[in-house]
Length: 500
Image (cartoon, rainbow, N blue to C red; front, side, top):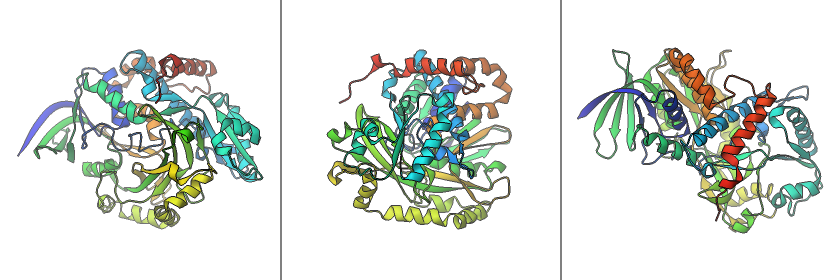
């Protein structure tokens, strides 16, 4: 038995940060549109957006070394760092708008000021960090960054990391105080609370099983109510597939040409979390190191102060792992069922090219807790086994696709949006920097999918995001104003909560 429900303008699939952001933007731009959200699980943002499932950094390229690459001539390419920082500033402006206009309340529940640091050891790495610091500190976006290779100064910055450390080998760090810790789980819940109380229909425990085009050009979703078992059919003019690792299977069901020759490779993660409050109190920063040779960029080791459930926490990781599931709550058959006649060569090519990565992931899976402790001791020399527990993080599905230059099966380590040529459906695939750049990514979706409305919507977008369409790097005065206004709205100290 199935029933059909029509007259919806927009479907959002999945209740993660991307759907939350797109829904919130559309609600501001066209308040009268009817939006329906389908979520397979019982709660909001339980997969990659959940605070225990992601790094929660607020990726602004302040400390992530893989966003600044050394060129063959020894100079540092900072273009990716600039892009990511500019995109994070867009998120900050939109969140400020939501707080100032009382759409969401108490920003301290999802964002806290926190120094961002990069830490390296060894002469070659110290030289790289010094060059990186010089390249970034000349740029207005990275003003206020400090560099030191003085062990005494580093003891002030990172006492826990320097305690018991042999400093015979060169060591250096950069530090910038304008970083943040973002709890994307909390933010996602806030955004859906706002949407739910403003006319958006959110259907939990509803699994989208199929998507197909109707003869009148609408999209029909076959949706199973997981409580009653009843199958419902819903139609809409526009569909956004924001189901994290689950997006690829749904995109394939649409049959759009843009969905062909795309595959996914799942990478799981494990964090170590400190259970000793005395140790947690000795560290107050996000400290990123360099990825090991052969490791995927998402496995860059970092020791992070986090604010989760109104408590200061300390996490180290992530250790990579492999599971064929595309979601934590997914199926062991996810990987195999994602292989289709149109992407099998793409997938096989990726497998042949990435044997090193596969070997690395298998090695990571086999690590014992003591072996993970050894990696942690590269950061905290005095770390004790009994102070740390393991937490399984979210599944990330890295996009595999054929590149325009004819490269078959290239593994992509970023966030990808796939859009139908007529803009009627869009899907988000990929991983980091993901959540941190959600507002920028969703504005791109809006521009691609609703070109007929965009001119009319642009003034409202600029009201919400004053720097929209401009480069902050090229407008230092605007950058200063943005930094000041977002800090006042999101990070001002009078809203400081009491942490237990």
